[in-house]
Each structure stands twice: as structure tokens, then as C-alpha cells.
Image (cartoon, rainbow, N blue to C red):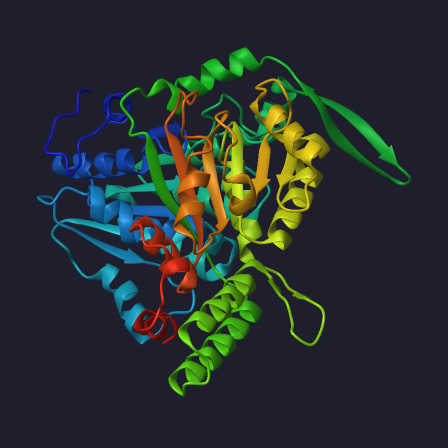
Length: 482
């Protein structure tokens, strides 16, 4: 089916192909690499179906770090102005205003209603019940979509079971992900089940596994279990998957912009939130009362950033460490990402923690660090191995002040900023490590941002080309700390 209507933003060639191939399908998968615009394809799908008189409701499900982007960026940027629409988003513990907004979904609306929920909500009874109610009341003329659908790859997880059951009530179903098979071919089963029972040709996961996996029975003491030790018939599986999906890689999209920027939002832990608010309040009071000058506020802001990363050096004691949502957000992002990745942080602690975690998950040769403590030989080896497409080194974790100059890292086309520096030059130089001669793809830059924190202010300032390290913050400091 050829799609031709008044787009809010002009689609790239591959987005047009995705729409044309999927529009007349009840169930479809957009397997589009990060930065190729799969969100826009879904938005145009929804508005097209509405204009055909087939749909007036959409339930969009995305991980915590992504679903806010749908509300604040993707829908406002891409949804056609001449198609009436409203956006309602789920809040697990809503205040009075948020509760009224969610309840407004039952109010008649002459247009498209988009209800956005986070994937994690479906692990709990409140989210599950909400999804079932939405499906019962709106599914007949509705679409349900799971963004970053590898979050439902575990066929035994509560949220996977809930979403598969809820999806049955919807006429249209879509899944979106950059990499549908993150760790094993078995990952595709539950994603396909969400689209439709038996879509892969099997009534159960175990029948599916029997066809495509090599399984051995292992015995450990009194316990025994099945272990997947290999795979088979994968060409056949790929052909089946291709019948209900469209795969897009950045390297195949010649009309993409050179640089693509996006954000992943992170929810702070209760401890982080308490510590952050306490320190922010103290810094603001001291600034107001004249006890500290604006340059010293930069140090206080540095401490706020450290709290967001999960550590805080104490003046009269050792560094305090605590859990941070940033690591979970990073690991989720990497599961959805193909190829080599550069990860930047201004903090030594972050670099060490990220490197160790990735080595543990992906193998010792998968990650290398490049910062002040890295020897000259190890720095050279890290760059050479990263630039070798055959080498297993996939993750380069560096400090922009140290590794952001003079080296070439063009094997990567995904860059993650875990904790930004205030220095604009550090940001520009670090972005250009892979965006230079030798780069054959568009580069996607992802900022990990803790919601309602200094992270947002820093990223916005750097995007506006403001060098915070060279500014006397003055009133800006008061605004950020208020």
C-alpha cells in the first residue's frame, strides 16, 4: 500500500518504505536501528489509520527512559497538525492533576487519543489492570505498540505475559526495536507472540526452541535444567521473521543527517533524590546569603552530578557509593544497539564501574577504558582494537578531557554521554572522535538524563553552544538551584 498524505515532517526514503510495507497489516515489526526514526514511522501509521477511519486510539508502551520522549518530543514533533489528537500519559502514583488527566481517557474525543505507558508498569497489578481496561474499551478501534520491544523478550516475565494478553484486544499491533535479537535467537519468540499467537508457526516457546535451538540437559547435584548450547535453522527463522517485519540499518540510509541527537531519561532512586534535593537546597541558601560565590557553585553542581551517577566524595571521609538508575538505563540502551559504542563520562568512578560491568556481562575483551589512569600502551591498544572491526572490543569508555582529543574512533556510530562536562570544547571534541573522515554512517548521540535535574540544564546549554566552564553563572545558578 502506498502512503501519501500531509506529513508533519518529511519522511526519509526508508521510512516511506516501512509505511508502505506495513500500512495494510494488522501486525508488524519495525526493526530499525537507533537513529533511523522508527518513532516517526509509528506516528505516521497511527495518523494514516485514523484518516482511513480505522482507528481512534493508540496505546504506546516504552521503557521508563524512553516513554517521556514520546510525550515531550516525538508526538509534538511528528504528529500531523491537521489530525486532531491528545496525549495522556500513565503515572503510577499520580497527584490530583495527573489523576484527572488519566481519567479523561474515558471522555469522548473527536480525534486520536494516545495513551503512553512505561513497560515496567505491566509488571504490577495497577498497570496490568489499566492496560486490560484500555484494551477492552478501545482495542477494537485501537493500536498497541511496544517501543524497544526487547524489553518483552523474556517469555516468562510478568510484563511479557501481561502485554501479550492485553495485545489480543487490539486490532492493530506494532513492535519497535533496533535489534530484535539482543543475546540469542530465542529473544524473538515473545516479541512475535505479542504481534499474534503462532506468528512464528509454533503454539509454544518450547516447540519453537526445539526447532531452532540445540539443547542439552545439565545436572548440578540434585537439580537439572536445559541449557541452550547452540542454534540451527537460523536462515529459515530469518525468512519467517522477514514476512512480518522491516529491518533498517543506518549504513543503508544514505539520506540521514550526519548527526542525530536523542535523550534517555533516568528515574533517580529514592536515596539519590533525597541526597540531591538536600545538597541543592544547601547550595541555594548559601548562594542567596552570600556565603559562596558563583564559581564555587560550579563545584556544588559537580557534586550534584556525582550524586546522579551514584557516588559522592565526602570532605571528611571516604567516597559514599549508592545505586544509580543510570547504569540500568545504559545497559538497556546497549541491548537495543548494534555495533561498537563510545561511552563518555567526566568521572573516574563512572568509567571504572561501566568498564567492569560491561566486561562482566559481555566478556573481558568487550570493553576498554581510556582516562587519566590508563597507561600509554593501554591507550594505544584500546584505540587500535576498537578500530579493528574484527576485534571483540565493542565498548570504548573514556573521559572527554583525556580521550576527546587527537584519536580516531570511527568504527562507532553510537555515542553515549553518561555524565557531561560543563566544558563545551570537551563536548565538541568528543563528538568528533567518530564523526570525522572515515565515518561511513550517521552518528547517533544519546544523553542519559536524570529527570528534573541538573542533567537537563547541562545538556540543553551544551546543545545551545554555551560553555558553562567559562561562565560566571550568576542568576543562572539561582535558576538551576531553585
